[in-house]
Every structure is written in structure tokens, then in C-alpha cells.
Image (cartoon, rainbow, N blue to C red):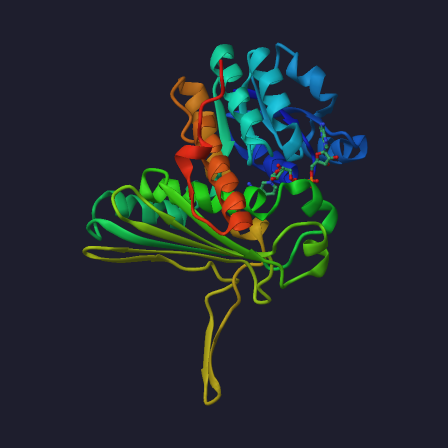
Length: 337
Ligand SMILES: NC(=O)c1ccc[n+]([C@@H]2O[C@H](COP(=O)([O-])OP(=O)(O)OC[C@H]3O[C@@H](n4cnc5c(N)ncnc54)[C@H](O)[C@@H]3O)[C@@H](O)[C@H]2O)c1
């Protein structure tokens, strides 16, 4: 039985409290939050102690910690937890700053504990099925990937201000999904971003709508489209064209009833947002973590994967500022040891 401490009891921390408690191989022992009331609420709901993050990290009775605190705390907490001998699952992104994330990677290598990054979309049953089909060669050689990822509504500006911007906060999922599907990171990244949804997002220095194109060493191409607003719900689709056909993962709808009348054909909207759309993925992600830690095998999404996606976000941010494509190799230089 994996004894787990949860750091951060906000939106995604509440999801993880459910996955940890609902898994037969793990037990939620303790929860921390900078706002004690948040931790108390989750602790009471799941029968876990309320303690400080430091206390949890240094408790020899805890085997693993799940980090669900704001992004600017991730590297520090990963380093502290691995130094204390804990296995870690940390929410995306690894950090707001690429160099800090790379330094964290080196510290973790020295500490020798496993760290998995929470790229939950790899565990979505639809995307995982698509990837398995691709890997089996069912559409021949992949040539063109298109990822669509639209949120139903923008987050509060207070969140936008500390998020690191759309490319690091939101598109990071799509960068990792592209790496998962294409098998390797791209060679070049070109980005165009604009703010047409919410003027407050532009005032905070961020964009709310963006398109990225990526080229690969072997000539393949990928396109990612992001928006912070789709009035019909959470739009999460993937399409990949190969030499022998096409694979598409469609949206998950609120229900499957289709109404056809003289006026037209109407189906349900996509599920509202990530809590509804990806609950199965969060459960499968946690199961993969528990399985790997219990068996002593490699975690399926590594810190290297997290750093690669962050480097892509950094490249996209630079490209959007300069208007020129950015080579990933320029960004992903190792930091001095
Ligand atoms: N994988 C996903 O689908 C997904 C979805 C949402 C958020 N996230 C990521 O999860 C992280 C948290 O996002 P959120 O939306 O849950 O934010 P949130 O603001 O809802 O929750 C964060 C919580 O952490 C607490 N906190 C702040 N500093 C802390 C500290 N030093 N120690 C302990 N607790 C602290 C806050 O009081 C808050 O309760 C972010 O990095 C975000 O990118 C991932």
C-alpha cells in the first residue's frame, strides 16, 4: 500500500484526492495547503491528516507525494521531496522557467527518486487508443498531426498572471501529446498568438488564442490550435493523417442522443471542462504511477518529458514574440553541471 501525501488542495488537488483514495494500492495519509481551510476541507472529505508540506515531505511513514500546488513552487517541492526519499507525481508544468526545470532535473538525478509529470492526456482512453493504433502502423507512416484544444471559458486573470502564459500553462499539454504521438520532439516551432477573447488577458501580457506549427527532422508537420473560449464546451480533438489512412479522436459528449427533425440534426455538447472530460485519464494516470512505483519500474511520463514540453513552450513564446521559427535545439541546451 503506497502511503501518499498531497501538496495543494485546490482545483486539481481535489481531483487527485479522489484518485489516490479511490485506488486499491494507495492511501491518502495527509494533505497540505498554504490556505489551511482548503486542506481541512479535503482532509475531512477523505479522512486524511492536515499537515504542512515540509512535515509531509520529511515523514518517513509517507512513501510518495503528489504535488498539486501552483507552478512556481513545483521545482522546489520536487527537489525537497526527492531529497527526502519520496517518489513524486508532479502536476504540469515542471516550472515556469526552463533553466530552473533543467537544474531540478539534475538534482533529481542525484537524489535518485522517480518523478512522474502529470500529462494526463496520455492516459485518456481515446488518445491512448489512437496512439496504440498509430504505433501498430494501422495508418502507415504518420505525416500530418492536428491537435485542437479549446477551453470553454478563460480562467480568472489572477490565474493568468501567475500561469506563465498560454504556451507554458495550456499548450504544454498539447506539446506533450504531440511528442507522445509523433514519438520525438519537433525540430522547429513557429507560433502566432493573439488576444481576441478577453481584453484583461491582453492587459496581463498574455494571449488567449494561438496557433503553432512544428516541423520534424524527417519532414513531418504538426499543427496545434488553442483558444481560451469555445462557447459549446471543452473541445479536445486529435487528427493524424498517415500514408495509409486517417485517425481521429473526437470529443466526448455529454450524452449520445442525436435528435433529427425537419429543422436539422442535433447532438449533445462536449463535456464542459477538464474535470468532466479527463476524470478517467486522471484515474489511469494515478494507476500507472502506483503500478510503476510499486513494481520499481520506470514511470511512464518522466521529468525529461516535462522539460521537453517546457522547452517547446519556451520556443513558441519566443517565436510569437519575434515572428520567426525557433529551433528547439537552440532552446534545449544543457545547463552547466
Ligand atoms: N493536469 C491538469 O489537467 C491540470 C489542471 C489544472 C491545473 N493543473 C496544474 O496544477 C497546478 C495547480 O493548479 P490548480 O488549478 O489546482 O490551482 P489552484 O489555485 O486551484 O490550487 C492550488 C492550491 O495550492 C495552494 N498553495 C499555494 N502555494 C502553496 C504552497 N507553497 N504549498 C502548499 N499549497 C500551496 C493554494 O492555496 C491552492 O489551494 C498548476 O501547476 C496547474 O498548472 C493541471
